[in-house]
Image (tube, rainbow, N blue to C red; front, side, top):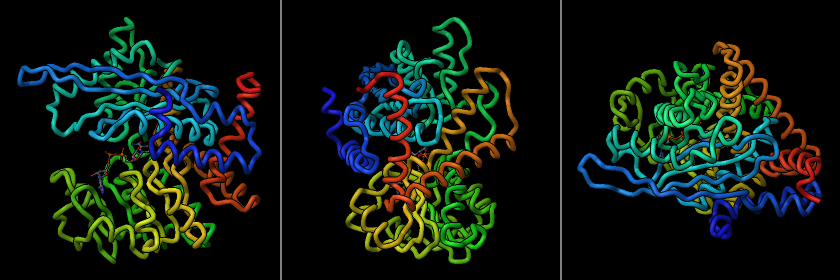
Length: 419
Ligand code: NAD
């Protein structure tokens, strides 16, 4: 039932924001009703012959929310807590993100309920190839283009590309993004989401007359998003005073040496035990007195229980849904600038779009071109959301959603999808 998808907490949170932003722009009721629900959802069984010889059947999902603006686009998550409603909410957020960033793409998301750390490489490959086969009729460069997310990476995309191409009879590099550059990936894709977080942080600080090079940053999560946010922030002269991952958090008032920490994590897998820092908890990291707090791990981490302890001047949401609606309201009223996920972590899908374009025309750009184009899109999108927010006296989350809805509404009306 579609209601099973829309009833989860993250989906309900998204619907509340959609309705509130809809009121700000007097959104057409029929457009609103259509956008509250996904277009279609697929649930598949994925049998995998494990190394032990036993067959384990995993459950996989793909939710396609809306394709008014172009092919469906969205990541694939491998995590034990993946469920249909969470995937649905993330699919809806992709629709709003792509619209806001002015990309010709719709929104989708997928996932498999699995802890990838418990599988061997060959089991992961078998899982990914079978999942791709099951998704086969619904994905493709003109239909739906997956990308990495939590628990998946460029290797996952390489297996997907290979399976889809084998079944099509010819190489279809445009079927996924976030793949290795050797097989049609884009320069700069790996760092794109983290770099986008930092470009947004820079613009947000400017509204407070502060420079990035004078700012302190705390980053929760040291994965694909958080690690690159820390690397880019450090490279641009900020003091990255704290980072964390599932093993705990590190703090150094003078600033962490991020290149050393990256080397340490490559060897030790986690940040725990890095010598040049003090150990703190993830909760303490969230409450640090910093200019920028970048939650880049999980959803719901800034909530009604801890929002009163948050001291950051700006929150840049690297993760999807890290701030609950109640916490967002409290913090925005207190003067903290909360830059919402659909804007703040949009760098990944922007460079995924660049990758897809490069694959379609078989012409590839260098990293400087990618970074310059990404910067332009992120700055332009921030300015659009900021201006709307100032003009209409609404917070950045409502402003981002309202700006996104305006474009979607126009497109849906023109296409005769709402009356
Ligand atoms: P990832 O799996 O590469 O990294 C996740 C990080 O969070 C890891 O360092 C992990 O140790 C840490 N973590 C897990 N549990 C934690 C906890 N309880 N406390 C602190 N840290 C914890 O995932 P990712 O791709 O970096 O994605 C992170 C978030 O960003 C997700 O919400 C994802 O949807 C979102 N996102 C990712 C991309 C992308 O391009 N990868 C793009 C947009 C949004």
